[in-house]
Structure formats: C-alpha cells, structure tokens
Amino acid sequence: MRVEQAKEIIKPLMTEKRFDHTLRVAETAVELASIFGENQARAELAALLHDYAKCMDLSLLKRWIETSNLPKDLLLHHHELWHGPVGALMIRQNHGINDTEILNAVHYHTTGRPHMSRLEMIIFLADYIEPGRNFPGLEEVREVAREDLVKGCWLASGRTIRYLMDKQSAIYPESFQAYNDLTLKIHGGM
Image (cartoon, rainbow, N blue to C red; front, top):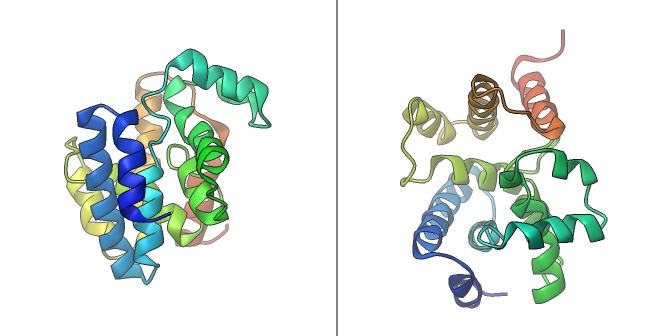
C-alpha cells in the first residue's frame, strides 16, 4: 500500500482532528526513522494506519475482540486500548497488509510490549510526542527521543504508567512488561 492510498483510506474513517493527529504522527515517525535508520516509507505507512480503528463505535471494537483471537483481557481494561489490536486485524483483513512489523506497530502502539522492534518503538513514541501533544514533561521526552529511541520509549512508558496510577486506573500487563523490558535494556539486570 502506498502512502497516498493509505491517506485516502483513513480520512473518511476519522474526524478531522484525528486525521490531523495521524498526519503529525506520520511526520514524526518519518523523522525518527531517519534518525534511527529505519525504513521511512514503512514508518510513514505504519503511522498513517496506527489509528485506523480509533473512531469506531465501541460496541464494534468490543465485538471484534470477542470474536477474534485477540486477548480477551483487553475487555477488562480501558477501551482506549482496543483500537490498536483491532486496527491491526482490520488492516490485514480489509486491505491485505501482511507486513508483520507494521501490524505489530499498529497493534502495540497504545500499550507497548517487551522486545519491541525499532519500527514498533518509532510508532509508540511518535504517537506520544507528535507536535500537537502538550502535557507536562513532554519536552524532555521529545529531546531524549531524538537521541535515544529506547530511552525515549522508556520515559514515555514510565510516564504513561505513572499517569494511569495517579488516576487509579488499571494498567494493561503488557504496558508493565514493556516498561520492565526497556528498563533492563537501559539499566541492565540486577
């Protein structure tokens, strides 16, 4: 699938605000791919598709999870996590995307996971730091992200977990596993 084709596919599925966010994530992903030696075209395509299912009705997202091989424990966590895994299934089924790394980047962009590929980390981070975002501590993550991809993901992952803990929200197990994996990569084992 080409970039322009992806834009034509996603635009009618999204609000204008979501589409603009997606374009900023794509620009950020291309920048990070350039810095860290990842294929820029694949990064742009994965970024354009990362929120493919974001604007879907929650009942449809739930049905996809219930009727597919996706982990059912997703349904025990906030629905904001659902669109990544469902989106990955949908772009494979509806558009024939079979590139495992792109599918994984879409699937795990909200939670992260242990042993993320470079492309997965780029999409995870691009979604977090795109220029339209604005929250305390983001500038530090943006600066680190352009110097050290793993450390940038580690900071983003840790801040997301802390934010959810402060809200007394449940945290998806793969988010903790991603944080632990990134911590071990940065600081080594004990």
